[in-house]
Figure 1: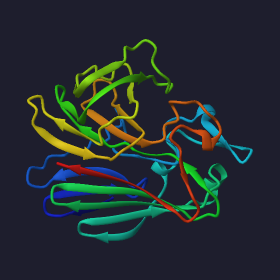
Figure 2: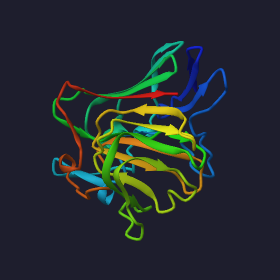
Figure 3: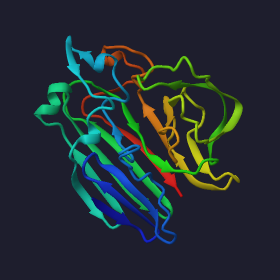
Length: 281
């Protein structure tokens, strides 16, 4: 575990999966990240790459060949190495080994960068295509935040959209009524809010969301930019919420051909894709 701090915030990151494990305000001791209770959900902020969600038939077809792919890809379990480390800044990276290439035949380097700036954490996931052909992937963030029931999720803009619940099989839950936002910007987190599964939004207008207490006092703001998919999730009855901006989502359209998957990122040879997120507390 690697820890950085800037005198205001501290951040702990696990070298396995470059997963954030703790984001704490030093003056108050307040912990903002879910602490990975193994009896509830044993992760905190996994990186989803090169798949987001469960691929149709647990794999994909590329270049006429079928490959296997685990749910949410392999980055969350990869061993990263430290490239840069300062008091308030950290870069972790990994590249594919031969075992990974058996399931994902692309040359790349993946870097996870973390910087503390005042009361803000800025982190970025960077994919560099080191091969000679176009590389296809999905990329998502999955941080879980501590909440109290009655807290609210406030979108950066008023939304007029319908979100669907997805079941444990990663398909729309036909037994659950959708969540309709008709010019609204606020959702209230109740104990049974995720009783029907995870909540899948179509493309939202907002580029950020905030968490507030029941009285509307903001305690966390997450800016993720324009993304094609946004999901909310927690285990039913557990006091946390995952706010998940995604580039790509395999649950939404069951397609086997890799380059045809919904929201897939196509990265040309020698190019870099950067997904930056800012969390202010």
